[in-house]
Amino acid sequence: MAIAGSGLGLLFLYAGGKKYLHPFEFAQFVLDYELFPQIWVGFGVAILPLVEFISGSLLVLGYILGGLDRLATKRGWASRAYLVDGLKRRSCLLLILGQSIMFTSVLIVTLLRGLKIDCGCGLFFQREVGLVPIMEDALLVLLAAGLYWWEFPIGKKETLPPS
Image 1 (spheres, rainbow, N blue to C red):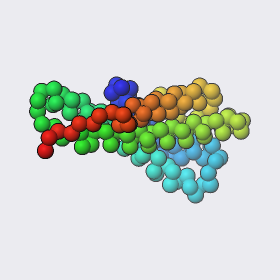
Image 2 (cartoon, rainbow, N blue to C red; image 1 turned 30 degrees about the horizontal axis):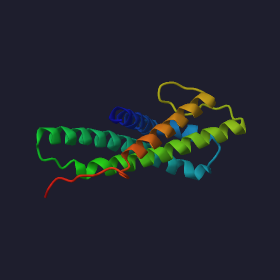
Image 3 (cartoon, rainbow, N blue to C red; image 1 turned 45 degrees about the vertical axis):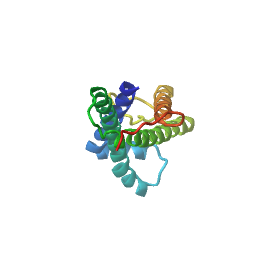
Protein backbone atom coordinates (compact mmCIF):
# COMPACT_ATOMS: atom_id res chain seq x y z
CA MET A 1 0.00 0.00 0.00
CA ALA A 2 2.89 2.34 0.68
CA ILE A 3 4.09 2.10 -2.92
CA ALA A 4 0.63 2.82 -4.34
CA GLY A 5 0.11 5.69 -1.89
CA SER A 6 3.53 7.17 -2.59
CA GLY A 7 2.92 6.88 -6.33
CA LEU A 8 -0.42 8.66 -5.98
CA GLY A 9 1.23 11.35 -3.89
CA LEU A 10 4.03 11.81 -6.42
CA LEU A 11 1.50 12.07 -9.23
CA PHE A 12 -0.37 14.88 -7.46
CA LEU A 13 2.88 16.55 -6.41
CA TYR A 14 4.02 16.59 -10.06
CA ALA A 15 0.63 17.71 -11.43
CA GLY A 16 0.33 20.52 -8.89
CA GLY A 17 3.89 21.65 -9.50
CA LYS A 18 3.43 21.70 -13.26
CA LYS A 19 0.19 23.70 -12.97
CA TYR A 20 1.81 26.10 -10.51
CA LEU A 21 4.80 26.69 -12.79
CA HIS A 22 2.57 27.32 -15.84
CA PRO A 23 -0.39 29.32 -14.44
CA PHE A 24 -1.38 30.99 -17.71
CA GLU A 25 -1.65 27.67 -19.57
CA PHE A 26 -3.63 26.21 -16.69
CA ALA A 27 -5.93 29.24 -16.64
CA GLN A 28 -6.60 28.81 -20.35
CA PHE A 29 -7.52 25.14 -19.82
CA VAL A 30 -9.93 26.13 -17.06
CA LEU A 31 -11.48 28.83 -19.28
CA ASP A 32 -11.89 26.31 -22.13
CA TYR A 33 -14.22 24.20 -19.97
CA GLU A 34 -16.69 27.09 -19.79
CA LEU A 35 -17.94 25.97 -16.38
CA PHE A 36 -17.02 28.86 -14.13
CA PRO A 37 -17.35 32.63 -14.33
CA GLN A 38 -14.12 34.21 -15.50
CA ILE A 39 -13.71 36.02 -12.18
CA TRP A 40 -13.38 32.66 -10.35
CA VAL A 41 -10.74 31.26 -12.69
CA GLY A 42 -7.88 33.24 -11.14
CA PHE A 43 -8.83 32.03 -7.66
CA GLY A 44 -8.99 28.42 -8.83
CA VAL A 45 -5.72 28.67 -10.72
CA ALA A 46 -4.04 30.08 -7.61
CA ILE A 47 -5.44 27.57 -5.12
CA LEU A 48 -5.83 24.21 -6.90
CA PRO A 49 -2.16 23.66 -7.80
CA LEU A 50 -1.13 24.41 -4.23
CA VAL A 51 -3.67 21.96 -2.84
CA GLU A 52 -2.48 19.30 -5.29
CA PHE A 53 1.18 19.95 -4.55
CA ILE A 54 0.82 20.09 -0.77
CA SER A 55 -1.50 17.09 -0.47
CA GLY A 56 0.78 15.04 -2.73
CA SER A 57 3.92 16.11 -0.86
CA LEU A 58 2.47 15.42 2.57
CA LEU A 59 1.10 12.05 1.45
CA VAL A 60 4.57 10.96 0.32
CA LEU A 61 6.06 12.36 3.54
CA GLY A 62 3.45 10.45 5.57
CA TYR A 63 4.44 7.17 3.93
CA ILE A 64 8.14 7.93 4.45
CA LEU A 65 7.55 8.70 8.14
CA GLY A 66 5.44 5.55 8.47
CA GLY A 67 8.25 3.47 7.01
CA LEU A 68 10.80 5.11 9.31
CA ASP A 69 8.50 4.49 12.28
CA ARG A 70 8.18 0.79 11.43
CA LEU A 71 11.95 0.54 10.95
CA ALA A 72 12.62 2.25 14.29
CA THR A 73 10.10 -0.01 16.03
CA LYS A 74 11.74 -3.15 14.59
CA ARG A 75 15.12 -1.92 15.78
CA GLY A 76 13.74 -1.18 19.25
CA TRP A 77 14.35 2.55 18.97
CA ALA A 78 11.92 5.10 20.33
CA SER A 79 9.91 6.65 17.54
CA ARG A 80 7.57 9.63 17.39
CA ALA A 81 6.47 9.33 13.76
CA TYR A 82 3.17 7.80 14.87
CA LEU A 83 2.04 11.31 15.79
CA VAL A 84 1.90 12.43 12.16
CA ASP A 85 1.78 9.16 10.26
CA GLY A 86 -1.90 8.19 10.08
CA LEU A 87 -3.54 11.60 10.34
CA LYS A 88 -1.55 13.22 7.54
CA ARG A 89 -2.03 10.32 5.18
CA ARG A 90 -5.77 10.12 5.77
CA SER A 91 -6.17 13.88 5.44
CA CYS A 92 -4.12 13.99 2.25
CA LEU A 93 -5.97 11.03 0.79
CA LEU A 94 -9.27 12.75 1.54
CA LEU A 95 -8.08 15.89 -0.28
CA ILE A 96 -6.82 13.84 -3.22
CA LEU A 97 -10.06 11.88 -3.31
CA GLY A 98 -12.08 15.10 -3.42
CA GLN A 99 -9.92 16.52 -6.20
CA SER A 100 -10.14 13.30 -8.21
CA ILE A 101 -13.93 13.24 -7.89
CA MET A 102 -14.06 16.88 -8.99
CA PHE A 103 -11.77 16.25 -12.00
CA THR A 104 -13.77 13.19 -13.05
CA SER A 105 -17.07 15.07 -12.73
CA VAL A 106 -15.79 17.99 -14.79
CA LEU A 107 -14.57 15.62 -17.52
CA ILE A 108 -17.91 13.78 -17.61
CA VAL A 109 -19.89 17.03 -17.82
CA THR A 110 -17.59 18.31 -20.57
CA LEU A 111 -17.91 15.08 -22.55
CA LEU A 112 -21.71 15.18 -22.22
CA ARG A 113 -21.73 18.80 -23.40
CA GLY A 114 -19.82 17.72 -26.52
CA LEU A 115 -16.91 20.13 -26.12
CA LYS A 116 -13.83 19.08 -28.09
CA ILE A 117 -11.10 20.55 -25.91
CA ASP A 118 -7.79 19.43 -24.46
CA CYS A 119 -8.47 17.94 -21.04
CA GLY A 120 -5.67 19.98 -19.48
CA CYS A 121 -4.47 17.02 -17.49
CA GLY A 122 -1.10 17.80 -19.03
CA LEU A 123 0.93 15.34 -17.06
CA PHE A 124 2.85 13.78 -19.91
CA PHE A 125 1.06 14.66 -23.15
CA GLN A 126 -1.94 16.53 -24.47
CA ARG A 127 -5.20 14.75 -25.22
CA GLU A 128 -8.83 15.55 -25.81
CA VAL A 129 -11.55 15.08 -23.22
CA GLY A 130 -12.91 11.57 -23.68
CA LEU A 131 -13.40 8.18 -22.10
CA VAL A 132 -9.70 7.47 -21.52
CA PRO A 133 -9.05 10.50 -19.28
CA ILE A 134 -12.35 9.83 -17.49
CA MET A 135 -11.36 6.20 -16.84
CA GLU A 136 -7.92 7.29 -15.62
CA ASP A 137 -9.47 9.77 -13.20
CA ALA A 138 -11.99 7.15 -12.08
CA LEU A 139 -9.07 4.82 -11.30
CA LEU A 140 -7.49 7.60 -9.24
CA VAL A 141 -10.79 7.95 -7.35
CA LEU A 142 -10.83 4.21 -6.64
CA LEU A 143 -7.17 4.18 -5.62
CA ALA A 144 -7.54 7.15 -3.28
CA ALA A 145 -10.75 5.72 -1.78
CA GLY A 146 -9.13 2.31 -1.30
CA LEU A 147 -6.06 3.78 0.35
CA TYR A 148 -8.22 5.98 2.57
CA TRP A 149 -10.23 2.94 3.66
CA TRP A 150 -7.00 1.01 4.26
CA GLU A 151 -5.66 3.83 6.46
CA PHE A 152 -8.85 4.22 8.46
CA PRO A 153 -8.30 2.84 11.99
CA ILE A 154 -11.74 1.27 12.50
CA GLY A 155 -11.26 -2.29 13.67
CA LYS A 156 -7.48 -1.90 13.91
CA LYS A 157 -5.78 -1.97 17.25
CA GLU A 158 -3.70 1.13 17.53
CA THR A 159 -0.87 0.77 19.99
CA LEU A 160 0.91 3.76 21.34
CA PRO A 161 4.38 3.51 22.81
CA PRO A 162 4.62 3.68 26.59
CA SER A 163 4.97 7.16 28.07
